[in-house]
Amino acid sequence: MNTQVKKILILASNPRNSTKLRLDEEIREIDNALKSSKHREQFELKQQWAVRPRDMRKALQDNEPQIVHFSGHGSGEEGLVLEDVTGQAQLVSTEALAGMFELCADQVECVVLNACYSEVQANAIAQYIKYVIGMNQAVGDQAALEFAIGFYDALGAGRSIEYAYKSGCVSIQMAGISEQLTPVLITGKQTTNSLIYSSSAYVESEVRNHKLTTSNSVSTVIHPSEIPLHNNINSSVSDDSQPEINLLDIDDPEGQVPLDSRLYIERPPNETRCYETILKPGALIRIKAPRQMGKSSLMLRILHHAINHNYRAVSLNLQSAGGQVIASLEQFLYWFCARITRKLNLPDQLKDYWQGPMSSNDKCTDYFELFLLENLNCPLLLCLDEVDELFKHPEIANDFFGLLRAWHEEAKINPVWQNLRMVIIHSKEVYIPLNINQSPFNVGVPIELFPFTRTQVMELIQKHGMNWSESKIDQLMELVNGHPYLLRMALYQIIKNGVPLASLTEIAPTEGWLFGEHLRRHLYNLEENPTLISVFKQVLAVNQPLSIKTADAFKLASMGLVRYEGNAVSPLCNLYRRYFQERLGVI
Image (tube, rainbow, N blue to C red; front, side, top):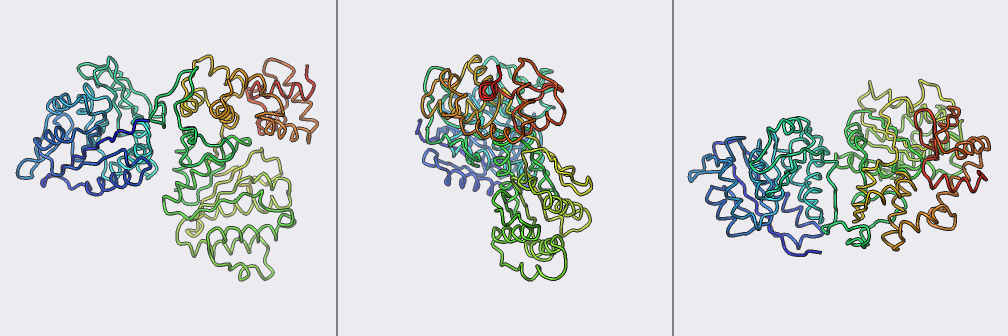
């Protein structure tokens, strides 16, 4: 790992006759981000305020920085706005800036122009500097601040420039600011084809019309989601070599993917849609996918997003409700309220509300409305995981799910209930008979998680520090398709224990090894439904997609055993085909 200290030079300019900017706050946040980072010893921050043209040139010569960050005003084609000797605005032309950075091209790795309309200067500077970030339109003060925080948080964590750029854009979006398309990352340094990273369709069309060009390059637009996010400062490795990566950074593949993990793979537009929805009054999000497909990891990020917006947040796994709790609706709702109260660290006032002849639903509603929501004075996010547990108890499920639907409807007219935001997570299709007007499963925003695409699988492989050939990726895709858990288990074994992919593929469908527990769980679930076993055997017996009854297809798909191909289904992956053909006696 390269431990050379990188110098970051901050150049700030806010002339007296220009609009006042929050430059002090931006630079303070950059300083804080680096000082609190795990790689803080690898960065040295230098600052130059009230920058005049000669100050900029001298600061570059004296400090010899690797990263240059300009904060101030931009004026598009006219140049950047610096200060003259009297503190008034003085424009510095694009040509002059490019010439200045040409002189220090051997030391500067990245230039950040956190100023309005600075993409013009970024394009010119990219002739000589490898990474340049500019703004393709006016950028608001808060958006500029959020981008800087996200960018330097990522750099301080040891991430690449590309990753840090995307982190800055995401930081803008997570702050609820619709300017995440404004920053543009250009890779250049006298290459034949420089790349402009942007999610702006406008910029893309401009480039394709050859309007955004430099004297030495033709630019191509790539969406930020296509940037390979190498979280390690070492490069990826080839097929035959071991990954140059800190093995301690590879999370155990069991359970949720931690918030700070390098291995979380976004599935656009799911994350953005959830982050935007949960900030709306009375929001309800329904996340459905088979087990181990990433539901809880997404829930964790929704919770984090809400907390960052000053919500109180509670997650409750309904599998933790024991047999006695689910013995009656009264006991279940009392437990439900008590657990939420405890998690919010509020005084237990349940006995004051849990008395009298009212129904359990009314008592629970009064407790939420008159005590919990009233006392919090801020939005409350309630995430309910594994609600499938209640499908086994229809006498409770009907009333409880009807209650959630009633709360969601009440939020449309009652400001108190608008502070309750809910996320409901389940694996199975909802087969219990629910009144269409009393079900929470046909309202709100539905989010369904599917297996990773090939592009996402490639990203996950890269995040593990490996650079595989197309044929090797095909081999892994054939084995586990894009199943997130199976992919992470396989890659974990390859990296941690040095198991070759060919060997892993050969012994994968055996109960005594890597995927044994996962496969046995599927087998036990199938054995509870003999009719489904018979249908699944038909699917396994043919080598092409098979049309089966709609209800059977839904059940097998909700278990995660098959994938749809049109109206027909086939086994989700070759691992399932090989294992279940043997275990179910399919020739």
